[in-house]
Figure 1 (cartoon, rainbow, N blue to C red):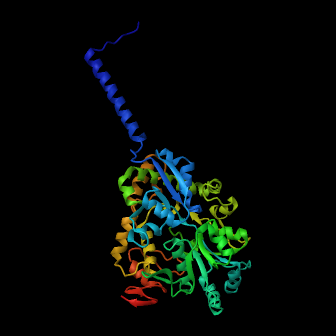
Figure 2 (cartoon, rainbow, N blue to C red):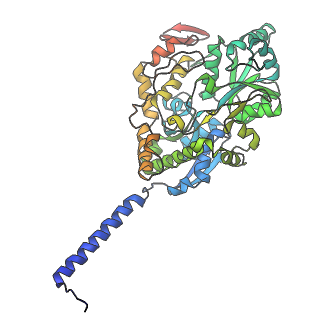
Figure 3 (cartoon, rainbow, N blue to C red):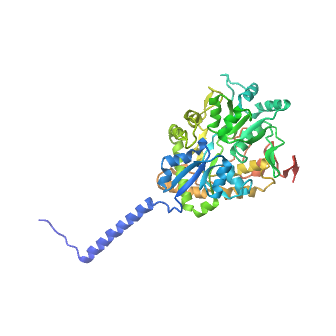
Length: 468
């Protein structure tokens, strides 16, 4: 006989109410986990230059990471860095792949004045300096050879100095291309030259050529045009990101002599830039963009670069870099070819996620500001506090950490991948080609320790360095 248990109407109502409450709690918990950010703007247009380090944008698009955040993104290549920056400032672009120096220079008013911020650092390393075959043949006697007969790397600019002196004796200028006056390439090339005793020239408010007192004349050449400009003899060498150094090797017109990894180990490279107004008006959208880019960077580096061959295939498409896949793969897959046939392992030539690459460190910003001051783009001596204030107004780890915390909560990234307790400054390092120590907390002491360039209390008047 089956026993039937009856329940009073009051007890039944209480039971039903409890079940409903539990269901509501479960639904609320699920909503907290699954509900996307309330985006202020979901249709976005981002700009980029055709370089391999735009990869986080391409991967975030191709792998659906933008869509996962509710973002509908269009990616558009830009003609040059100035057009790209102007597009962000005017609102034609919502954000862009930028030179690390661009948000800083714009914010302090060197060139176009605008407050640009970055919540995301796009990569480490990725550049190289290439010289013409003629210059390389002149340099080679000054470069030590190893037991295998190949040049010993890193090659210091000391080997280039006698070549420049010979050009001068012959009455010929020595011309070098770089991509933009506030580009990482400009500062890295200048650093390498100066470390070898070669003066790359100064800027002043009245002369923005950057060639005051120069032994080597640096000028702007758009990255995709560099190999052709070198082949035409207009320039004798250049500093650029990939794939345009490897393109010179493939064409047989030049030899890369040094990578920026060898100038400054794991140096910060590009950033993702937006206006401060955009970040303020669209805080949730900015976090969502940053989330997608962090995921893309992780994909590019995970499993010991296992995804790089696929990334090469994507970047080789005309919509992105549009270069031969074999040229892109030369550096993106952990190798770098110097002289034709001299391919070496450089696993960290391109870094997108390792070593906290995506975190926007204040000390990275300050290094670029010190170089602006060193070469006269910042005309007057500034106190250490100025460097920190500018860095904190442009680099936004607060936004980055909000995005990263959400990704950790979602189980998308590991907590250990993010430097949660950082004060925004990397540890002091002397991993530069000249061994000089850089401490972001002491920018003026660092500037004064460098052999060539402006020192505290100095400025440029006409063609002369004078005390302020």
